[in-house]
Image (tube, rainbow, N blue to C red; front, side, top):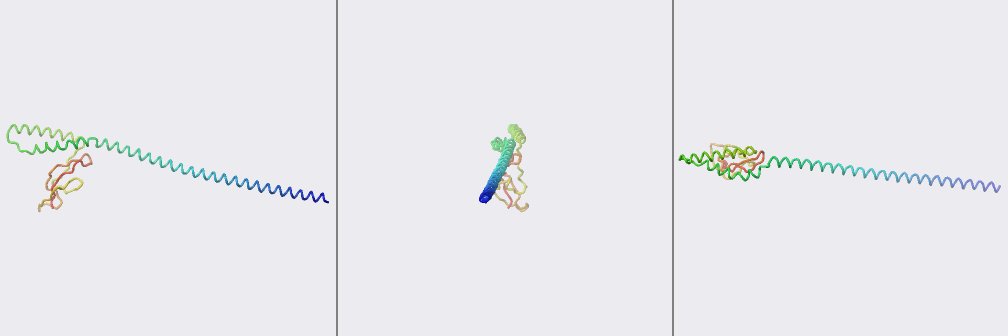
Length: 185
């Protein structure tokens, strides 16, 4: 009987050992599964971060490309701005020369020559997009007019430009120089 007891005890010990091995194996498998899940979660987070980074970089590139294109278009559109701005005083002087009254025949010939030069210069500048800003009789607009004095004319409404003291010019849609005007009070 002692042998049977020993055998039973050995069987119980073997069963207990097998159960412990099963528990250890299950715990090991559970740990491996947890580590895999954790690694998957880390990789998914990293992928999401990289996707967001890619989208930001793509948006930055698109913005830079658009800004670059707009700058090139603007540079092309207003390429003559510097030259036209430098020529405005010469245009003003020719305009003033044309306001002088001529009496002699020689002065009339000179006047016609100045008038032709003024016309050609103005036509060439207009071809590049220069336009005279209308002023006299218009409603005062601070975007296009610079009021340097006020006058009183009871026949006209308040805020109407009475006189243009210096012509204003714009290049396409950009003001090069506002008109210097006198405004009705």
